[in-house]
Length: 153
Image 1 (cartoon, rainbow, N blue to C red):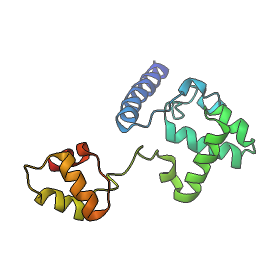
Image 2: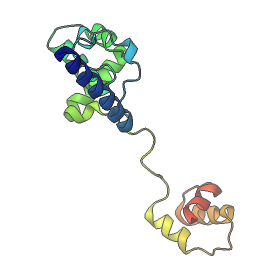
Image 3: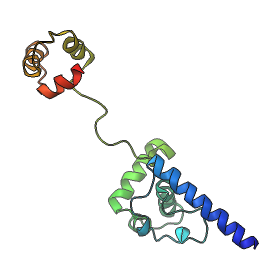
């Protein structure tokens, strides 16, 4: 009976953990590819779905256990190139480096505060295309009419 209770707690914590990982966007993209012995399911602490834990254990397997980078990557569901990207991120930022950076740009590159102020104060009867030409002649920045129209909203 006691073994069943601990099994139930482990299952429940895994379900909860999976939900939290999904909400945080931290689910390993290929948990089925993780073949490292730690993630064989015997210990509920090691969960192949936990991308950060898998990355950490991959680095540890190479540095501490002496596995080659290729073997460590393979056993943890990553490519050799992926291993080196993760290792570099860890070297630069520690544990934070194991979290994925948000993809894409960090915001508009050409819409500086000065350009935005100009667009906001421009004649509202001007079309996006006309205002784009004004911005280009005044600031030397080429913007698409749709960019202007979105900035006006």
